[in-house]
Length: 509
Ligand code: SF4
Ligand code: FE
Image 1 (cartoon, rainbow, N blue to C red):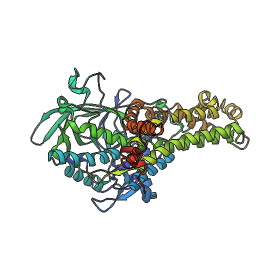
Image 2: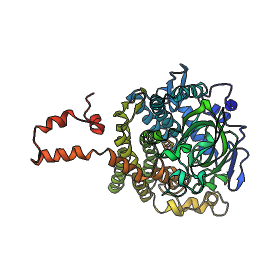
Image 3: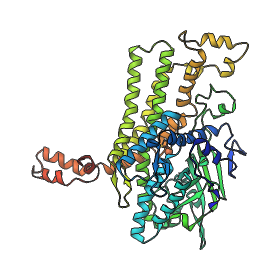
Image 4: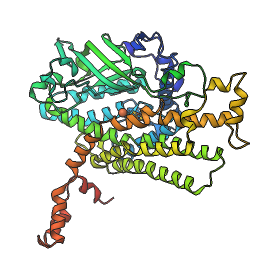
């Protein structure tokens, strides 16, 4: 099954793009089979965004690369398991930078967060059941490091009737599950929805999507699969205004170079050999995996603060092109956008700074702040987007097309009547307006807005976790002591008895 291993380690973005050529994948887009995703004009921007993760590792290795503990060589930080707070923090800094450089989702964090969660969960599973998942995971990671591959994390099942557990569904395929077992491994069927960057990955790790019960043991499967494994069909998720990238221009697309990618992945009896299986029936560890994965992934959404930097820049730029950069209400809106954007970053990076060690030695970020970060992300980019549209004006949604600008008959009219400040070219002004459209209504609004809402769990999922971690009993005791209901001596207990989130808040150093 090691057919997808290349001869050499991938280092640059160009080498990464070359590594995707000539693969035999079954991909459908617009009802047709895609021959070559690498040259497809609608798919290519997402590949470019992923390639940027490699180029950044070359240009800024301290930020986006690490020395592999397995191979001793430089590999992408996206393949690294965090062993201290600094590792967690640097993940976030890298994510913000990549958001700034691409203006979109660069797709590589799901695998990173999956590795980190799996590292500690497999360790604890082995401890409970004397299994050997942890060493198998490390062997797999070593292979990924050797080639510096992109690994996607495939978690979200299509779920069918949301009121039913996996084993209760009429069609068991709505949750990925084991269908057959041999001496060599297992076969799985089912589908995963919204898979970010999956077609741009080399491997993917399939994981359960939620807490499972005893009767769901067949759904408790974690395994690594090459993206070009036999039996997989990909159906590409179309995005708002995506067909513009088929028109050939560079203005109306808004962001000609970069885009995100989501696809539905359908598994039809896909084989996972024993060496790549990291959970097989341990249903009672599914919840731990989902919780740890989402703890990492929900603070990975600081990526949106990097994307927000681009949108704030576009809003400031259009104000300047319109000749009104100094108007007080415009400055105030830019300050407001920045405040919202930094709120996302602040909570995400704080979650990393409050990271702590698991039994395996891998560091986990603070779950409360991670959930608070992601909950902000479900809301604040919408407000930042609203303010960007406010500053952009109605042209964001009514502007003539690139073809009209280039038309022999009417091009001069577009030039004349879309002019802002005299020293700013009409085309440049149109480009900025199209970028605002791209990020708030168009292709990259998928990543900036809707993915912000639902990625790593919809808002309610964070509220449930925030509710679980909020330590109300502790807070009630605080109130009762202050109100004179409980004795003041109990305060000593409250100082020394800290647990959970507050243990990390008050940890010195
Ligand atoms: Fe990474 Fe953000 Fe894209 Fe998720 S949405 S894969 S965290 S860039
Ligand atoms: Fe995501």
